Amino acid sequence: MVHTFGALMSRPWFLRRIYPTFAKRYMRPRTAADRRALATTREDPGLGTVCGLWGSFASPRHDLRREAGSISAPTLVVWGRRDPVIPLRVGRKVAASIPGAEFIVLDTGHVPSTSDPEGFAAALAPFAERVFASQGAAAQ
Image (tube, rainbow, N blue to C red; front, side, top):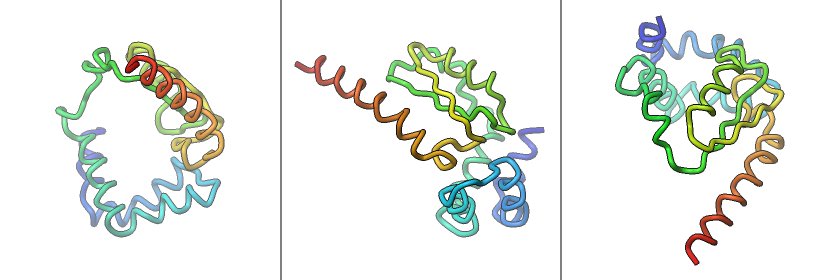
């Protein structure tokens, strides 16, 4: 079903018709940033980006779950506690599949970075500082 729906959502004409209603339901926009994110899908480049993203879901070559264990870059997985599309248990599984990944849960829906930009930044900034500090120490 994901493959079929992803194939449909990768078509601009279909995306223009269904995405505004679909995204409002799964994103449950609360902030101006959420509303801006939804608005960007009405024309390019946002429309093309979302079409490409949905099209990738329909392609088996974009399923990278098997490769997750070989990720060696510092990784932060940020998940929305109230995500109506992908449950929190999936986020935990994603983080557990990546060696050394840190997992942060925000009280948001599907798009934590726009629904709670301050909370997202508060999670990201210390992670980035630790990564940059450790890479600087390793270079010396």
